Amino acid sequence: MKISPLSPIGIFDSGIGGLLIAKEIKMRMPNEDFIYFGDTINMPYGDKSKEFIIENSMKIASFLYEKKCKALVIACNSMTSNSLDVISKKFNSKILIFNVIDPIVRNQIFFSSKKIGIIATPATIRSNFYMEKIKKYYRHLDVVQISTPLLAPMIEKGLKIKKNIIINYLNHFKSIDTLLLACTHYLFLKQEIDNFYHGQVHLIDIQKIVVQEIKKKLNEEKLLCIHPTLNSKFPIFYTSGSIPTFFEKKVRILFGRKVFIKTHVFNYS
Ligand code: DGL
Image (cartoon, rainbow, N blue to C red):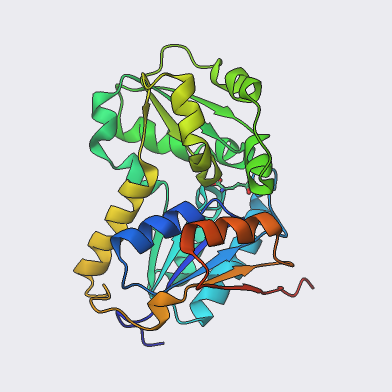
């Protein structure tokens, strides 16, 4: 399959989490055409087994590959931490593969921290993906991670997250200087979390760091789209079941009305 700068970027998550990554891509690379996939029927991934996550994230990756994408962005920590190696093995030699964890772990940001907290889904915590990587690169760092299973499903449904839920979770951390929101859904909660800490704990700018890396690599590979194309004006968003109202609402808020929102149902045999 021939890819070119004009080929789309495929971005995927279990639902709305990856939309903020897609938004950052749109802001920093406005000429890019992208296709988004939210596996809304299987959301939340955070409470699924590794086998389930591998099987289903591979289905999405293959779907986007068939759509002739030049790159895949796994905009989900639960998928990245459980299936990145399998996805990379299958597609790395064909197209570019990006994820939301490696650019963060590689970032210099941790050198200025002493103690960091990580909040993530049970599937991400169980994988130990962050711990292993962070401990390898930053021996000086004290890392505490907790699983926060209530958050992503509530954010996906557009439910108001009560202050005491956030407080109960964050009270597990004592004297951290940095907090990593290690689930893309939590990026929608950044302001509430920042308020809880009165701006005293550094919240890593995940979208910015991830998308800077994507742009740099596309540029190096001569795959960056330099001129606006017709497709770049009309991104497509797929959901894996009938389109959830809140998903559609978020898409419209972030990307306006000139978008396509469609359903693609996988065959489960
Ligand atoms: N947005 C996802 C993540 O980054 C997953 C949320 C879920 O489906 O549980 O982990």
